Length: 65
Image (tube, rainbow, N blue to C red; front, side):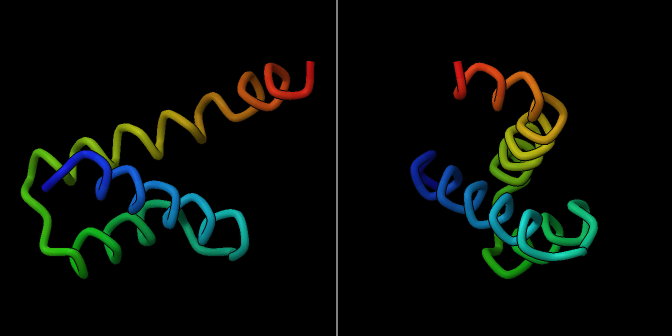
């Protein structure tokens, strides 16, 4: 799968997480299952989305400076 599509899935997951009360793990699992991803792409998506959430405060501070 092209990395561009994986990144679009990351954005979709993060938007759904921000707008809902669902756990991020269930959103990732649902999106990855729907997309029939290769295990490497699934790992890439999981690393990106969880990394963004883990560093959300740092990213927001950086954006608003």
